[in-house]
Image (tube, rainbow, N blue to C red):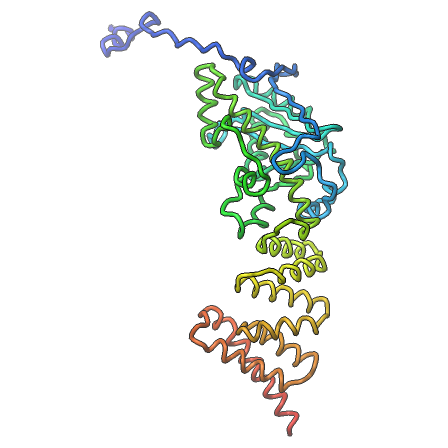
Amino acid sequence: MTSLSDRLKSLGVQLGAGNLQPAAPRAEYPIYSVVGGTTQLTDFGEAYFVERFIPSEETHGLNPLRFPSILDKLALWAADTRVALLPPERFIFLDTESTGIWGSGTLAFLIGLGRFEPGGFRQVQYFLREPIEERAILEALNRQVSPDDALVTFNGKSFDLPLLGGRYLTNGAKHPFGGLPHLDLLHLARRLWKDLLPSRALGDLEVQLLGVTRSQEDIPGWMIPQMYIDYLHTGDARPLAGVFYHNSMDVLSMASLLYYLAARLAFPLDAEAPHHAELYAIGRLNVDLGFAEDAIDIFQNTLSMDLPKDAHGRLVEHLGLLFRRRGDYEAALQLWEQAAAEGRVYAHVEIAKYYEHRARDYAVALRYTRTAIEVIAAASTPAYERVYWQPLLEHRLARLERRLAGRTT
């Protein structure tokens, strides 16, 4: 009977290790020779980390590396009052770099943390020298986080925390972030600057708002996953110096952006040359957070600027609504009359409502209702606006005509 080895040989299969090519030698450039760090001993082995302290007198771009003094509106935005009550040293600025392979195989190979301390800002970066050390750096990260902390991230809700949560789960451990107050600055940046900036990526916010210029050492984010994979194959850590720089800058920029955001929300009119789109967004945010008087102040100041027609009309509409809510119908009517003269249907309707329900002057209410119907009948009126307003106006017209008829009989 032919043996299995004979059958394999007949198929051209080489048996044994004699014909195997030796593995390529690993480069002699370990991570500690590229970015000087040290190790921390955990119950699961060593965790490699790099630490850096930045004195408080240093700046990051145009802003001091300083914790904001007022966080009340950011706390309301985050729906967590603890944000406004915790001391600066309790806030952890977190950013990760990953292998970019979505799913259970995704590794967070570099975890950057930043925390304010007396006299400055301390950064710690945990690096996965080999995948086998993952449980150790997760344990080391556990030691950095307490239940009394708060998190600051940029897209952390969608990326960093799910990634780390998955890695803890894979390693049979519980992640330390559950229940912590969390400020994800990306979502607020999108809300405040979606009409002002073409991109709300952190690197673009650095340039447009923070005055930060990265050095040539920086690595584009899309290159980072492959650079780590290459490192695992070759052992050459030299290209990773730029990855450490990239991660460090991200953490620093989050701290600077938090300061900038808090200042813009607390003192929106103090900027040297505020843009009307940003002021409008801040005013709308104040409305949503319950600061109607602050919003009125912002909108009124913005109206004094040289505005595009659409921006002016939008401001007038929202300011009139705020005056109505406050019960200041005199101020609201002035704005509505201005908007009605510009052909704004909503303004005709608001004036008609005022004269029907408050002034009880049905004749004036009827006149504004008829004018609104004429406006929407114009060829320039968008179809969706006509579809929305037509039945409402016809209903109001019929009701007012009945009321006036009842008065004359």
